[in-house]
Figure: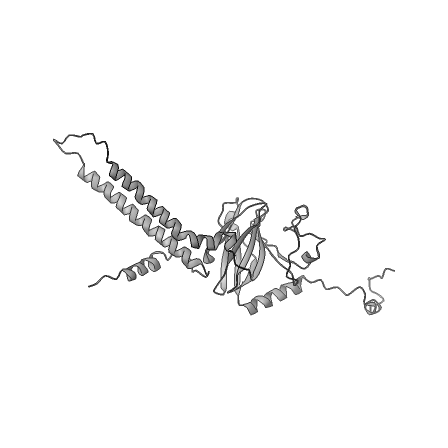
Length: 292
């Protein structure tokens, strides 16, 4: 009976690492393979090291008539166990470089199809989201305009910020829903308004610290529609366990429909000031007054 190494590795990877959530990211499989390689290398080193330790305990256990003797060491053995880990770690570093830079380095971030701002906050232990308005341009941020009603500090004097869509999460057990399209490069501008948080999307293999005062670029491309957890992977306070959000990945059509609906809800329902017929149509008993 022949032993198929490839099938054995496939079984070990698929069945032994089932605690991973389903990968729905374009670069997730590379990170999973890297994790699996380091995991099994660590397991192999563990058994080799403790196998030698147990063997030495048995071989050099106390025996009547055998005297202990001084052993200075062996330079060749010491050089070998120093050199082998060097080769191992250098090899892991070189092999992982492409996957790491692809998912983390700013210069490898592809041209985004969708860009959003994400802000972590401790006061309610939740995530805030900002989408550009129908003009497709984010309004400028002004630190002195940050408030609970304006967590991103959108400049009230910037015309591009007046139509921005801001979703303020109540936090805790009521995670807010954020929507994004599948098969699109999504760029997240990530920050925090108080303490360190960590923006964690387990299914997308994304985990990045949110640092107060800094905007860090995070990108991913989701391949499957569905509902996915947004978690905080940094101990950020007594309500850390409650800091959850919900990411809904939609088809482009469903995403556009959701975004249009959000814009309609945000748009104020007021009559144009230049429309004189609107003023004439006001009922006599109305409390509306016209200023000359």
